[in-house]
Image 1 (cartoon, chains in turn orange, blue):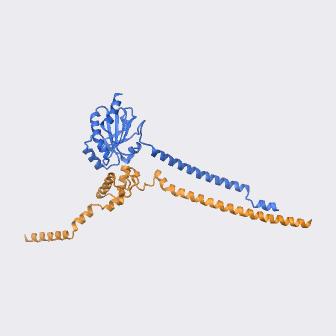
Image 2: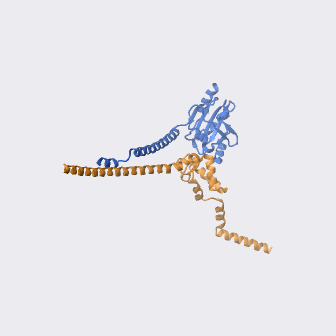
Image 3: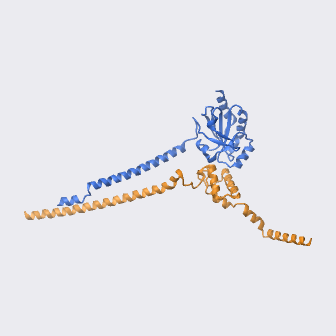
Length: 163
Length: 191
């Protein structure tokens, strides 16, 4: 009886200590509920088709609220970020992903802009190079003609002397 | 001598021709690429500017309902099919929910099938919605938004009525009421 009373007193003291330091609720909350930041970290990578061009974390419609609740529920169930994104992609199509996967026709989205940039840079370089060559050729031709005129004048001068 | 100097200052004729050919081929390739890009963008713009499907044969689809039943539109010829796009977050959908259920109860024995397609929705809320409005006709999610994209819907609700011959009889953008659908169904049943 005495030992039980002592054990109960110790347990009560430990419980009171935990409560006084506000430990129990915090630990439980952290373990079970994902934070808003965690939900938003995934939400900003998704776009709801109903609200075009607005990421899910910034969208206030009922549909987006429901989607964010789904993300929270999946995180609570222990799903990873990739699994959740895959779920949304399967359920609503890849257009909901902020970054579509680099596969199939989507490759164009990733490779076309740098490719076009390269072509543009190549065109500009060639244009500048052609212009420079043209100017140099023109300059050389003019100086050659000047030289030629100089020689013609000398020949004419010498011929006059001979006459 | 003077003439020979002048001549030597010019690039050879053959060199110019090869260079010019290369330039022309390069330019042609760039123009072809740009033209292909413009055609692609034009096609995409044209497709996005097209409104919802209005006539002819409606796009085929297979719908798996929340109860795991499967319906394929092309297999349902001989019946009148009413296709309704809805979502639990859509307020105008709530305005037509009761009328659609009444229609289903009145016409389900007359070779009319009503199919509800749940657009961009979450399952829990969708099932709550069906339960709230006592909806008993087949309903299922638009997985991957493939059906709504093929019908090019602009929003929800939208309703399409398909004839017994598998052709689109009428489409409604926005909420419908009992009478809207009844008129079309009666006309089709009288044929």
